[in-house]
Image 1: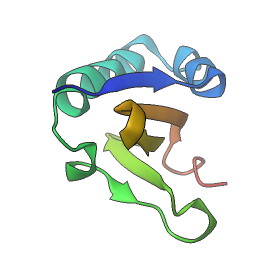
Image 2: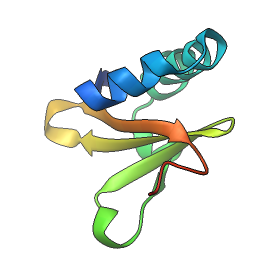
Image 3: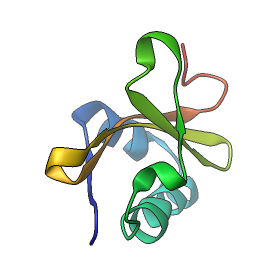
Length: 88
């Protein structure tokens, strides 16, 4: 089975603003670690409070905020940012 990885327009812009090395590391993480899993919840952690339906993935100092859509077998990356700024 394999999960489809999609980025929102905002997440795509945030990924482009990162340096080449960081962007490649995030793309590789999504492609090699998250996409082949049977359940992408194995690697991530659920967020709390108002963002409770979203999941967080850690890639070095960066965080990926994603929505897991079981019916579409899709991990939709909503935001990408440095750990100090992502939750603001």
